[in-house]
Image 1 (cartoon, rainbow, N blue to C red):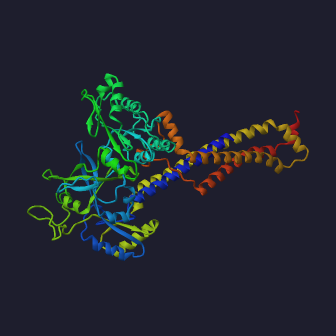
Image 2 (image 1 turned 135 degrees about the vertical axis):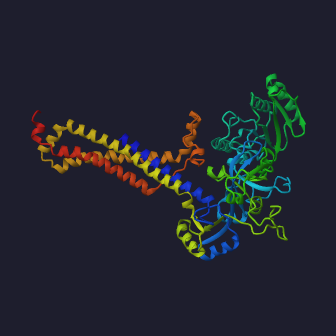
Image 3 (image 1 turned 90 degrees about the vertical axis):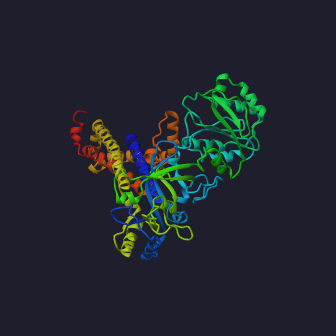
Length: 586
């Protein structure tokens, strides 16, 4: 019975997790990808197309009842740098309002930023620069600090909970509410599980003022004054409340520290430096005051996050024209452009978050010279309104009413466009990945089913031993007139009971495990430091699952069938036992 229980439990949990993974992966892919993509050729997805407005009209005319929106894109590989080793990325030129209609781009914006290229940092973007929105995976190389939150007074705990989601995955943090015990740990570093744990902790805390500022500041200073050999990350203490701690509290707490701690840490508020500079290893812990409320998160981003809003990055690449006409040629001169970061997005798909840099379509067309260019200056030719002339794209993205019918609609659009245009659906773009997940799900289910088969062999062995032990009893029953079907029914019912009880326990346990899957994974992580579902490998930030009724019915039915099949031979052996032979030696 235990074998059947464990087998059903394992099989149901594994198939449910794989089903949830496939479902969420498809949703993430569909969220950032267009349902249908039109390119210049079925053999290349980076060839240029002119007059995309006219092409968009033809697309809508080909399937007027199915096409919801059309958006142009100019996508090109680049190298991006910000004072560190350049890293590869993909520059994507878009028209924000059109892109928001086609993909989930607008839904994945971070820090409350609107899905456009407006800059709320208050910094003026220099002439010739372009605004950009980056994936959170790229930004992790630019945002990294020790950050401590102090909630002081009414409404502050909720503001801290809201602001935790703006903390970068590489940041290390601690939270204090009033004089309450802190949550989070600078030693473990930032992690989505840590943030959720802190948010749960905050939900159970009532707002409270800080009554003993010197004691709390001393704890903060001791937390931050660790050995900083090779440490360059900044320290930021964000106080949510009406006022910063009084100056006397700073001085009192500072004088309680050992000389070594003072040497490792410098503390300053926005208006005053309170300590001596310290040694070479000292780090500056900056205190900032934020008003609690709905705007606290944006204020945190603009003032605390290193800040990435308004900072500049350099992109370097060769133009599509050079790539097409000259190929690999040492005489090609790469082109460089400056981008100011105005926002970030997080789709939950590492492939997108660590690669994509969005910028305005016209800026990308100018930077890559995918427009009409002056033959002498090589600069884009502008019209009277300052817009570029004959801008080119390499993708036309389409959203349709029913995404599952994308293949049929793509075929209608292909006939309507004619020519040699290439059309790719969201399934075909990630076909290998989706097929791999489907195959892995099937193979995993088959492999896990062997646990049930092994349990069935245990039933076979147990019932066979039982027939041997109960030979005399079987002989007596047969001598008293028990029929062959009657004897078989006794042993088959025993196998059925084992299967039914095992399946029932497996169903109940599987439901409980799936309902508590992520807390269980977090508990394992807290005890062992190992997380069974790392998001950098599986692309998702939490363990997904999907309770699929037909699959569960199939698992239970197959298990019961195997249990009955295992009981069939022992029951047949018992039923065929000759009563004279059974009683001969009794």
